[in-house]
Length: 402
Ligand SMILES: Nc1ncnc2c1ncn2[C@@H]1O[C@H](COP(=O)(O)OP(=O)(O)O)[C@@H](O)[C@H]1O
Ligand SMILES: [Mg+2]
Image (cartoon, rainbow, N blue to C red; front, side, top):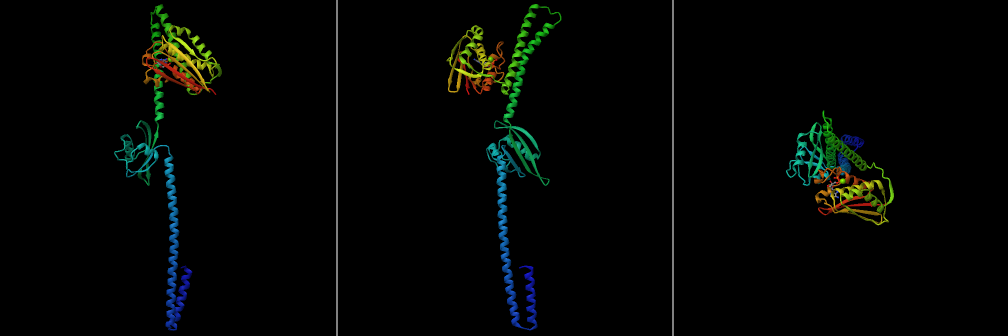
C-alpha cells in the first residue's frame, strides 16, 4: 500500500470513528470495523502481491547472475586450457584448485593436493618449494625425458598469501639446440686445434736459435703447407655448410645430362681411383637429364667418391640412375668396409667420423657428408644411407624435378 493510500485510509477511518463516537452509533462503529478489516485485508493482499513480484524479480536476477558466473567460469576454463603450457593454481591449503589439460597430461596421476606422494619426485619437489616458500622463481628441471622451465608466481590477496600459480614451459628443443651448439663448438675447435698445434710446434722448432737442418726445414715447410691447406678446407667447408643450412647459397640450376656428368667426375678422379684400385660401373641411361646446380652436385658426388677412396679400397663403385615421372633417383654403392648399424644415424652430423677413421692422417674433416646432405636438401631432395657392415655402403639421392 502506498503512502497516499495510507493517508486516505487513516483520514476516512478517523472521520467514521469520530462520527460513530459523536452519534454514539453502534452501527457506524460496526461499519468502521468492517471497513478497517477490509482495508487491512486489502493491504495484506497487496503486500503479498508485491512480495511475490519482488521474489520473482529476485529469482530472475539470480538466474541471470548465475548464468553470467557460469559463462565467465567456462570462458576462464577455456582460456586456461588454451594456454599451450601446463598450468596449476595451488590454493592456500595446498589443493590443486585450477589446472589445465596440459598439466593433467604432464602429471599423469590426479592427486588431491601438493603433498600427495603419487606425484613423481622432481615435479612434487618443485611444487612444494613454490607453495611453501611463497616466493617467485624461475627454475629448470627434467621430467620424464623433457626439459621444463617453471615459473612460480605467489598469489597475494589483501596482503594475505592465497596460494601460488605455476606455469611450465617445455624447453626441450631449446636445450637440445644449446647442447648441439656446444658440441659443435667443441668439435670445431678440436678440429681446428689439431693442425694449429702441429704448425705451432714445427714453427717453434724452426725458430730455435742455431737451427740449421735444411732437410727438416724442407720437410716441416711441406708439412706446414699441408696443415694450412687442411685448415683452409675446414674453414671453407664450415662456412659453406652453415650458409647452406641458413638457405644463403644461391643455386645456379640448369638442365644437364646425368651420364655425362658422372663420366666427367670419374675422369676427374681417375688417378686417385686407380691408386685405390677401385673400378667404377655407371648404369645411367644416356637420356636422363636433371635440373640442378651442377657445381654443387659435383661437390656431393666428389665427396662420395672421396669416401669410397678412403673406406672402400680395392673394390667396385656402382652408380645407378633412374627417373620415374618427376623424380630422379641416384644410387651410389661401394663394396667397402661398410658402416655399423648403430653409427648410421650419425654419419651426416657435422664433424662425425667413424672411430677408426678419426685417427687417420688422410681424409676430410668429417664435414663431407653433412655438406652433401645440406646441398641435396637445398635442392628439396633427400640423401639417405644404407649399409651392411663388412659388405658395403649405398647412398641414395632423390631429386624431384619441377
Ligand atoms: N663409403 C663409406 N664406407 C664406410 N664408411 C663411410 C663411408 N662414407 C662415410 N663413412 C663414414 O662416415 C664418416 C663421415 O664421413 P664424412 O662426413 O665424409 O667425413 P670424413 O670423410 O671427413 O671422415 C667417415 O669418417 C666414415 O667413418
Ligand atoms: Mg668424407
